[in-house]
Length: 350
Image 1 (cartoon, rainbow, N blue to C red):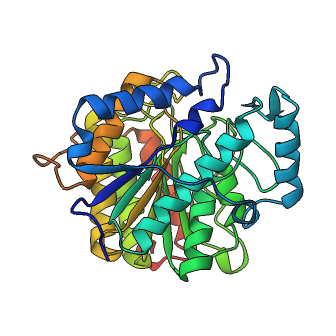
Image 2 (spheres, rainbow, N blue to C red):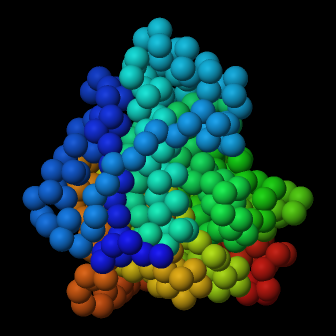
């Protein structure tokens, strides 16, 4: 039962700022400045702001190898500066990573139980690159995968649509659910970018074949390219799958103003995507969306687009948004490849 007059809740804990990456592009300032924007521009008129508890060690072990978790705890406790592949750390990083995971769990709890219809875990470090036994790409624990697993194990959710909007492929999410038809993972990412995974041909295995959908878009893809990918791939898949719950890897590094992503989405393009996510959730999943913050390394761009997402999902969307123009030729070719490969599983592409 919904316990607030507001449809959306934002989970935030200042302990996430203690993951001090010493001037790294994934730094405390990106989250602190985003909170400042939300405070300054009236976000809490349409959304609730709540704290959250850290994930328990048992929670982490639903996705990660316990030996890996213990290794992270030990390395952070000794003040080791790097946990592995492009993942800086400090003494407080283990605590912050548990808090980040806890935010993702709180988000899915609040949505599945009906306390709110939408939830955003505004947390760091991010998660979608983290493998069961290895840190990668600024990520320590896989926050979105932990959220999906919580929905499955605690609430018995059978059909989860996990949409990854980050500019980089979520290889950790792919690995964890590669044979699981209970999670339809769809990733819109830049081709040939870190971690150089996310190929069209990687569709899942066993019972999960066809439930891993990679859409690698060319460098500097913009609003029209994302619209085409959504209309031709994501929307038909959602209609065929009819999810009970929508989870979102909310990456903002596909924005043209991001220093890392290499893509060309505009503010308008992101707003359009947020609306389309909401439309899918409203049509098939009772409006239920739980999102976790992933990339986004220009604090100004990140703050205003997180604010736009909150407004969209709170029902204060404003006028209709239209995306005009044609996608790149290379984008159209990729989409045809996706349809061909996924057509082996999904009749909507035959």
